[in-house]
Image (cartoon, rainbow, N blue to C red; front, side, top):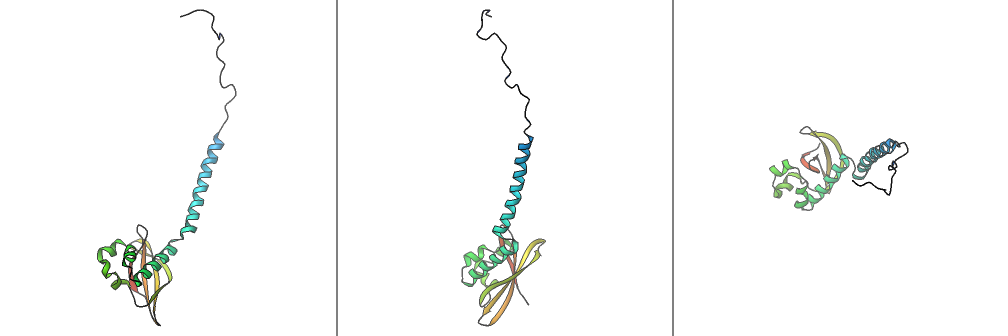
Length: 152
């Protein structure tokens, strides 16, 4: 080792001489802000996308409109897996189509195989001859039509 004059003979000065500051308020504020933002986004999603009944009526409207116009590709894309397994695309109209112009008139919450579902009422008006059906609409990888029956 060398002995001699050094450029700095004193001990180094401490880098932090003051008392440390408590930053817990910032962390708590960020966590609280994140929680408030999350709750607000869930609320806005419900307003933007609508609730289950709104979505079910919209899917039933698109399904019956496509079916009545002969668009089997669109209507078959809106049926659940159980219907796909039992009904080929070319027979879908035989199962679901009624004479006349379809109009969705309402919906009611129900259950389908133990899961929440909607019964959507569809009014088919054929120049005064009216047929009413109920479509069972379920949340299955999106909202899907999973059955029909005559109402009344």
